[in-house]
Every structure is written in structure tokens, then in C-alpha cells.
Image (cartoon, rainbow, N blue to C red; front, top):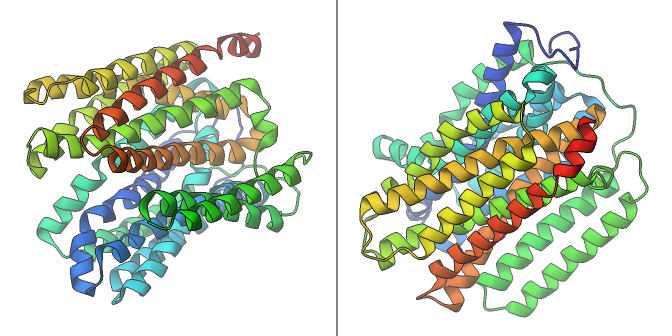
Length: 459
């Protein structure tokens, strides 16, 4: 299956390391793209299946829920059974589910296939960072994390654009069918190139996995029902059930040596602060990326095509800065790099919030570039800190928590935009961008506060 067991300090030898990077990059690109690519096709799919738009949204929600509830269980399985094995299982499931999506003839069939695809994507995402850690030598970990962070962020940002390009030349089924040949090729490469790592001799905790699924699933569903439905009491009841499940999970995991919910890692100050920083930053990112299209089209009168182009400078700037920030994090404290990055990000969001509706395309573009530079300077160093702070046997849990923090922040950010737009339709975008700037500033403070912990770790 995978290669011979890797020396954790030296990583994989060349050229195997390059093949492993290719396999990791292709798989995570597909997993992240499919989290956003289906949004563009929702109106088309709704018309073809003759269903309401509200029902078609489950094509997206089913995927996201499946990912969120299974990230930490897959991370735990990676530590027990081996990271490469779980990665290959996730990749195989994702590829087969993509074929099922393309062959679906009803909304129910497509939704079920999307759930399976989400589980496959979670198997990829949960193990992704751990495989990067064992692929690169320790001295080059920042470079590897930087490249990986760039791929994740760029794939997420260009998802709608890729979806629109496919729909312009083919039917919606090709949004999913294109994954099949790429998935098969990636599986062949991954089976030969991924690092083989030491496993942990312990049983998988099914009770904790169920509580984890209930906690994340009910909390997200409760927030969605509360904010987007007229039945607020039902939403509050679902949310309360999720909080109760989360409390039961925390109580069960509190004194375990290898908890599914990594409380042992969260007790490490630098790791816990990095998680908090990640949630704040990704929440701020989604507050901007979800609210800005409404602002560009509604308040500024731009077309849908113009809106897509106006959003483009952000991922381009991130693509340039992200890998550079990863290299810098091998030499300089991530607390400083991340703090400076989030301060720049906060300034960019504040400038977007106070931007006049008569702003020119150039005025919008340079503000978006500032946001991209700031976020790019923060992300890779923060991810490197999270992964490096965890003991090597807990790399899977650290990677699962990294992905969970990202998705938690993104979900919270999108939900807050919905709340702000519902409460104040005329000022919702301004409030969203302003809150995003405050959260980015809070993330900067959390990042800088890690400096003393980093110094102790280096000593």
C-alpha cells in the first residue's frame, strides 16, 4: 500500500516526497472544491429535478454536515489504523460517491450521494495535515504547511469560478464526474507514495464518535433553523440538544489519554490559542466573502460577472503570500507572523466596511489585495504551529482539529451574515465587515499572545 515507514525527522526521500505532495494536493483540492462548487449549480439542479430552491440547498448542506460530524472520528482512526490507509479509504469513497452524484436522477439520490461524498472528503481533510508533517523533513515543515494552506484556500476561493466554467460548457453532472478520473489517478499515486507511519494500539471509541456527530450536527442544524426558519423554538430546542451532546462528550473525554475530542492538545497553551486564532480568522473571512457579493450587487450595482472578478484579487494575493509565509515560519515565530498578518487583514476589512458605494474597481481591488496579503501571512504559520505543537503520535488529532476549527469558523461566519442581513437589510454588509475586522483584531491579539509559549518551546 504505502511506502516503507518514514523517519519522522527526515520525512520522505526524494523523489517519493514529490509524489506524496502531488497526491496530497490533488486529493485536498477535490475535497475542498466540492464543498463550494455545487453552489453555482443549485438553480440548474432545482429546475431539472423540479424542486424548490430551499430543498435543493440540502445538496450543499448534506455535504457540509457529513464533513463536520466525521472529521474528528476519521482523525482518530488515522492514529489507530494509519494515516495513509484512512486517506486512501476517504479518497476511494469520495471518488465512488462523485460517480454516484453524476448518475443521480432524483434529489434524494443526489443528497444521499453527497452525504457519502462528504464522509470521503472528511477522511481526506482529517488526515491531510498529518501526512504533510510526515512527508516533509522537520526543518521544512513550514514550507509544506504553506503550500498546503495555499491549496486549501485557493481551491475554496475559486470553487464558484470553476463551477461556473464547467456549467458554461457541460451539464451539472460533470461537476462531479470530473472527480472520477482524477480520483483514480490520485489513488494510484497515493497508494505508492504516501508515508507509512506508526499506529496507536487502542480501540476506536464509538460512543464518543456518536456524541461528536450529535454535538456538531445538532448545533449546526439548530443555528440554521433558528436563523433561517420561522420556527425559532424548534431551532433553539435542536441547538440545546447539540450543546447537551457536546457537554456529554467533553465530560466523557476529560481524563482519556487519547480523546477523540483532543482536550489533551487543547490544554497545550500554544495549541489552544492557535485554535482560537483560526476560528476567529476563518469566521472573519466568511463574514467578508459571503457579505461582499450582496454589497457589490445590491449597494454598488455591479453585475454577477463583475462581482466574481472583484473577488478575485483576494485569492491571487493569498496565492502569492501563502507559500512565502510558510517558508518564513520555519525561521521566525508564527505568533509574530500571524499577528501581523491578522492586523493587516483587520485593516483591509475595515477599509472595505467604510468604502463608499461609488468606489471604482481599482479602489475595491487594492482593498481586496490587502485582505488577501493579511490572511495569507497568517494562515500557514498558524497551521504550522498547531501541527508542530502536538506530539507526533497525536498528529492526526491535531490535523482533525485544524480542519474542524476552519469549518467551525466558516460556518459561524456564514451564519452571522444571514443574521445581520435579516435584522438590518440595508446595513447588514457593513455590520458583517465591521464584525469581521473586530474578530481579525481579536485573532491578532491571540496570535501575539503565543510568543512566550513559543519561546519556551524553542528553549
